[in-house]
Image 1 (spheres, rainbow, N blue to C red):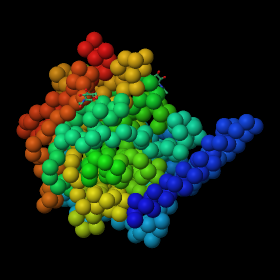
Image 2 (cartoon, rainbow, N blue to C red):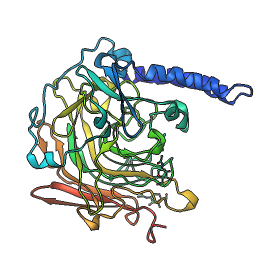
Image 3 (cartoon, rainbow, N blue to C red):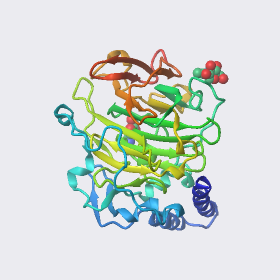
Image 4 (cartoon, protein in one colour):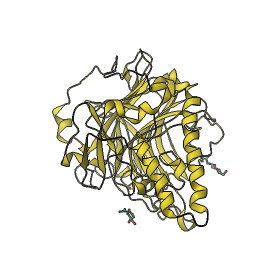
Length: 412
Ligand SMILES: *[C@@H]1O[C@H](CO)[C@@H](O)[C@H](O)[C@H]1NC(C)=O
Ligand SMILES: *[C@@H]1O[C@H](CO)[C@@H](O)[C@H](O)[C@H]1NC(C)=O
């Protein structure tokens, strides 16, 4: 039902843009007409702001009343009562951060120019150019359609997916109710605007056919989506293998945000430097055992909000696989491997301060406890291009280094 409804919303959007595309193609129809249609779309997407903050990176952050956020365009959410806190937290609510973690605390660039008032949530404003840049306007904010390959036990979703390359750690074969990781933050270089580089965790449910359920969160550099090369906090969800439902950030109805400090899709600041200061972000996603919603926390004390349980089929129960790591698009410019970087752009062997890491990776088990994952596997399509190496020690628990430069003499 839920999936059908979100599909209906997407279909409406599709119809809208199908009407739009012939307009832009037909002789005599002006660009300004197309712009007018985009304006209409943006008017629906961008909610009225109580206050707007100009970020140094060119973004505008709109402080939108919590009850006016995009989620409430969803027919199933019209009468939904916002939950202002989770019923349950696998670490206990409001864990005080250790002094050492506060030192290198990571924030968002737009904070330099202001904050949103209580009762509002910060939303990155979508601009004309964001929509016009999308390869197809009707899929703005959605992932590019992916060919879902045959199921394989190693990594069914991801193997040989056209042009996408990964260096990941994963667990499967159990029921999972959440995952956590602390992720080193870098600004990898992207060779072509239609490529991206991201570092994230995946909460996956179901078969890897047409109805894959996925919740994803981490950081990404995506010139197509944002119009620049900045490293941005992002989330993604789908309940049908990236076909009809789901989107990045708050670009469709789904995620309900309750936090007034962190904007999805906004630039993260500061960024780690090679042989320089290192910064990382913690992300925790967990399922509330009472309501079944999937909650997300950024850092040690920013509970951002939740994906309502009804958005999903398999994830309405539990996840069957967790993955952590990097993904890039290799569009093979000039028939050679892309030089788009993953992580820091350096191989795992280089270690701390040079290669990018995930540390303290954990899962939430069926007793709702955060635990070290058992039986961690690693996977990469081409280790000469991007690699992954995992390890374990006292401070970092289960960790791995990952990434690489892409094109190099061993990865032509
Ligand atoms: C990807 O596909 C190619 C050709 O079909 C095959 O040779 C290769 O082994 C596949 N890679 C993986 C990791 O399965
Ligand atoms: C992003 O980086 C690429 C090369 O890494 C560069 O060609 C492009 O101009 C940059 N884009 C922006 C908007 O800065």
